[in-house]
Length: 239
Length: 350
Image 1 (tube, helix red, strand yellow):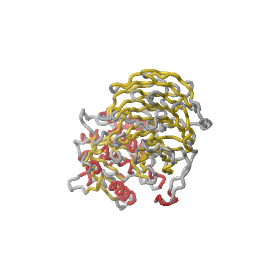
Image 2 (spheres, rainbow over the protein chains, first blue to last red; image 1 turned 45 degrees about the vertical axis):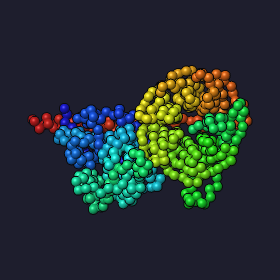
Image 3 (tube, rainbow over the protein chains, first blue to last red; image 1 turned 90 degrees about the horizontal axis):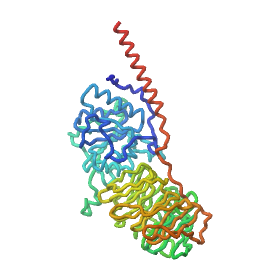
Image 4 (cartoon, helix red, strand yellow; image 1 turned 90 degrees about the vertical axis):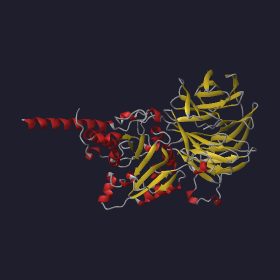
């Protein structure tokens, strides 16, 4: 078999912003039950499930870091940009050749804003990562933001109760926006992870974006949220 | 949007043509009220003047919903209105975006809109509360009779069941359509019907959130659907089909072809009304699942007002993003690199 070379980023450059509201052509399953994950993970077996999702995984830095840390968990990155997702795909193909370890991580080119429920059943995920999301500063672009009141319901839906959302941004306004939205949402509460939460330790240093911020001596802000039971239903004695 | 609605509370049909709402009962039609007048929103609404939504676009009725004491109407120019049973206006407001469907209960009006959001208001339409958001147009909406769940469907093939009024809590998605979901109807407290741009009609069990039955139409795109227990009547422009629901299964009972494109259907136990594109109003008798005695409803309708009936664009025909060029260049690049490597290997070995 021809040896897969490690991809070079210069061959995969693409503009940072993509309109998530338009109908680019994507492949996505009609429903979670019809998704064939074994195409992405060579060792995926009947009964296995993807447990971590990196929403907007960029060039794959977080997944490359998390993959050997959680060898028993399948994890996927969603990336809307064709060339960038292609880079991550090639990156993992090359990594898997060099090392047995990276068989549990992969990327899907898709629109997380629209198709999360197509890939994941209710309560499937244990962790969702939203690292350095595109700020979309202009007010008219706010509806392109990956964190919004409407989308929080979908994140809560695919995440198990007590599951965690990890957020990072080097733009204070974006960090504040995410904290405000998640904190005010009835199904999430702010969470201080214990020392043992290894994912929390690598949030800043593992992504290309994070490394750039560190190099430029900038600052990153993190916030982690836990998915909780619906207080409205709890107060009515239901669940 | 339904501009034709059977109102079981008054045992009559409500018909919206242009800005005018009419009532049809016992072969008689009656003009009720003109809708879509842009309200003067008082300052007490608590919204700064510059931020209030503004009405825009031609005013014509796009949806009607009824409950015991209240009728709610949405119009194309974003105006939402509520009336009592004497058709005296109870409340009036301008929605943020063009409303796409409306439901009403004894305490709330719920609307969905073209940007995918749903809001609830009190019956006077003074307090607005955000309920949920889809990432694409919400095409239709149903509030369950027990008011425990709000079911919404969108252009991205999804049917979403949310709790109500805690709509941030999604109970389930019903996924199966491969194009926009045009209409959803509750056939019973536990059975939901959906029709989509994929020309499929799907029957769903709301207790198990699973698919019970799929019927694919050979007659083109669905334009409307209506239910009067136990008969389901669907139309694909000119083709009308009647099914009977027994034991959670639909079986065909009759079909017919109309001379006109039908955009909206409504049914009582013995009668089916069809609003056509012209617009004309056709009436059929319904008996044992068979439609007969077609007649045209005469009335003081202002038929110069045309009816909005455009179906959304389908996705599957969407032009691909042109990335085939990228993959072609990539393939060439890899070929060239491999060739270079092999030539170098050969040179080194000499």
